[in-house]
Image (cartoon, rainbow, N blue to C red):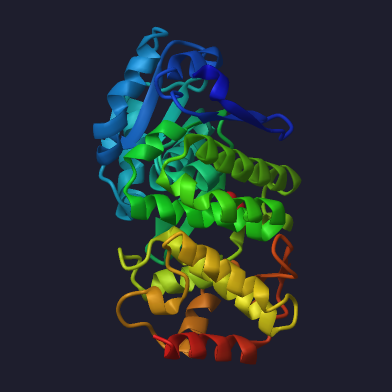
Length: 373
Ligand code: GLY
């Protein structure tokens, strides 16, 4: 089993780490994490849903190497990612007498990874942490690259720090426990990597995406590996998002507006918004004459092939009009000097960052997409 584990190295000077990808990593957590520890003890932050499924196997994996693992399970859901549960987590880590050389573990999806990473960043001015992502979205995006943080009542991810993990253990076996909708939402972020920088990977997804969704383990490992590799290379170039890292936000300006418009509810999951946002970014690029009209059609065809939401018509319930959506985009934290920044594309795999978006074309495209509902 061990030989199916792949490693992606993130070569950041002074804070390099490995992303280990494959089945059975939770069961062998002790062997993976043990060599990094100053003493045989970690403090685990997780949520109640993940704890019920994976905490005991994870603890058994650590115990096999003699590692103790007290754990705190927070309530599941985005509401946890705020000051209240954050301060509860930090106080608990202090009660557990986590010392400067100790290790915190984030066992869960994006909410837990972001919150636990931020707790590790501020506890005793910074302790190390390991990410053990249990959703596809967390395995290919949020657990890698060191963005940690919580939400403010005024907006998502407004409070945080860059704090790189010491190790990421992406156990692809746990993906089997995900609801199909959550798995496919995570796939939105996988597809994003092909669209932003690797046309051959997008082509591979067109061929292998359906098998991957049905549970093909080799295809899942390959997709997580390529996604992490692409993210690692971008983060190595631009850790704190002064330039290239913004490419990872392909589809996100549209997504954040749609998430705000749907009240961050079950009407639209983040990864679903990213998928629709990618389709809209390609549509806008085509209308601006940057890429061929076939490109957005190909993006939507792939989403349809995967059984995913592909445009505004697929979002249930009412949506605000085009101007209100543009207003919500303007609140996105990617706005710079009051100008909206978009990730557009010159073709599949050729994304770039720009503030030069034709506002008339944007409004017309959104109005048309809303009228088709
Ligand atoms: N999720 C986008 C980034 O890590 O930069």
